[in-house]
Each structure stands twice: as C-alpha cells, then as structure tokens.
Image (cartoon, rainbow, N blue to C red; front, top):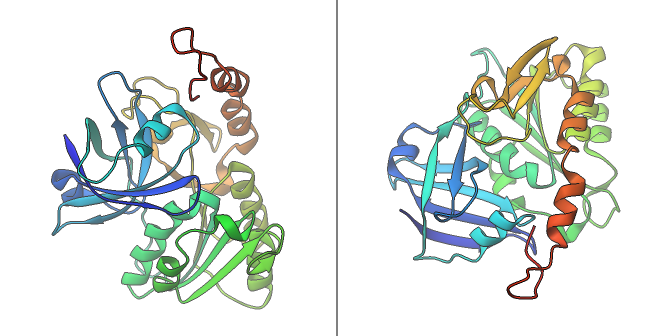
Length: 282
C-alpha cells in the first residue's frame, strides 16, 4: 500500500498527488513513469513521475481526471492509500554532457511531464527556455514551479486569455529565428503538438526529443500495445522509451492507433449502470 501524503487540485480536472514510495523514489529519474492500480478491481494505468524526493521517499504524479481509473484515484485523499504502484519504468531521459541550452516545450497536462525534464536540466546548469501552452488561462498549471526551473518561461494560450496568444510552435520558431542556438528541444504534450514541434526544428537540424503516450497495459513490453514506429522500426514505448527522436517517429500512425478506441470510450462514458441507474465514469 502506498500512502497519499499530499493532494492538490491544480485546476478543475488536473490533480497533483504525492505519496510514499521509497523504493521507487530511490531509483526514479526524469522521463520515467509508474503504473498504478487503485484497488484490486482497478485497471493498470501509466503515469509519468512528475517529481521525486529521495530523502522523503516520495514520488509525485500529476494526472487529468478523464477516465474511470483517474476519477477513482482523484476521490482518494491524504491518509488514503493506493493498492499497487510499479516503477520506475521506462528509460530515463538522456542528454549529452556538452548540452548548454535546451528548449523544453509542454502542452496542457504535458507540462507536468515537461516540468521534471526542465528541473533536471536546470539543476545541471543548462540554460532552459520553457514554453508552456494551454487552451486558456483557467487551465494553466505549475506556472510558479516551471518558472523556478527555467531561465525563461513563455506561456501561450490558444484564446489569448493569458501570456502570448497562439501556439507553442509559434514561440519556438520565433526564438530560433532570433538566433537562439538550442542543443536540443524536448516536446511533451498532445501528439499533433509534438509532430508540429518536430516540423519546426527539422529544417534547423535541432535534435528533438518527444515523450510518446501510446496505449500501454503491462509496462514490460510483453503485451505489445504501446508499439510505435521509429525510423521504420517497431519500438515499444514502455521499454524502449517513452523518449524517442521526434524526427524519426511516425506520428500519423501513432495518431491513428491512439484514436482506435475513441468510439468505445465514448460508449463507456455514456453507459448506464443497470444496478444503480446512473452513468458509469468512462
């Protein structure tokens, strides 16, 4: 059992949760993830490790309540416990030792994953330009935390209600055209956003790392559900990633696979339970 020590609502749909997991905290690194199971009947759900504290023996996750399992997790409070947490899983993010300047680009809840990347780089003395994009001001998360681990923080909103109006790609392209020499760009967020970030950096031959989020079940490479095509070869995000060279990822295939179950998910959200007469959280 993993006791919840802190819980904070970052907006109406996004929750930060810190819980005791000393063995995971001892080994965790930026870019890795865990798989949790809320109770004995729960499904296995992967979530990126947003932060960790080796001394306290805790890890932090940030998640959006969009499905049955994350909604169930969000009902737990400080003092409650999560039944199963497995990790750290995946390959930690790696940068060359000579990296001096990096742009970290996060989109929406993806900023929760971009944050530990920026924090790790900042702690090593790397100059970090962090570009965070949201639909509107009311869903902005982790602004203070991101500002503390970046040299420059740029916030964009689609509707212009906060920061710069427009997309993260606009800001990234503008910064590159102004002469910023990035040794690498890290992009984490919706798949279309990561794809277009890669298209911005490709003409400049800037190494671009993306964190992929395909359907994942066991986290060990056995089920094959998280397969992606990278440089024409099949890779598994859970054991080969989740970080990959964005210029080699087949994003169109990834988007098609991620959309495979959208109709079924919609049916689940609208399902009426015969026992209670109420709708079941999908």
